[in-house]
Amino acid sequence: MRFFKTFLFSVAIVTLIPNYTSMYSGYKVLKDYMTNFTEDGRENIYSRIGKYYVSAEDKKQIDCLAKNIYFEARNQSELGQIAVAHVTLNRVDHDKFPNNICKVVFQPYQFSWTIGKGKHMVPKDKYAWEKAKRIATLVYKFRGDDPTEGSTFYHTYAINPSWNRKMELAVVIGDHKFFFWNGIW
Image: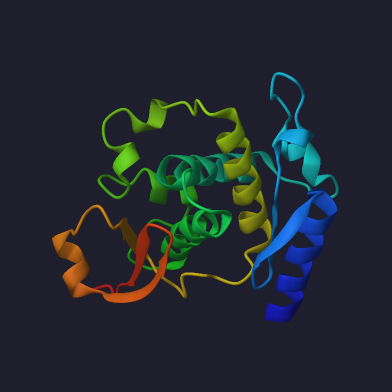
């Protein structure tokens, strides 16, 4: 089943996104997004998934996931952004977190960008926003291999929070360190 999901994910990427390159086992990501946009950058991401229908609720969840990718990792590689998406989904699957993406993303004090006016923040970089939406859609629909190996927490090298001492470092991707949490503080 895992092979089949990875295969579907790869086929979806190849079908949906021209000019792709292999970046990580099972993931194909776009080299240059800009060629797929109108002059004003207003292409609808959901129109590009064609036969992979997305319900209204799925669109809402994908939008929350895309915002988390955008505000947490827009300066990271595609793999780094995929990793942030997987941490969000790993939390949804974990019994100590809410059971949907929007509730996980906007859970108080979990992601720095959501503190204060986070819910009302609007992405300003059109290129990075479209990239985040594409990654969010594809990871949401097809999952693929998890580059974080099941991590539920991460932080940048710029900080060293006390909570990370109670966790096991899983992997480092770009500027982010990803951690396992056993569910006990």
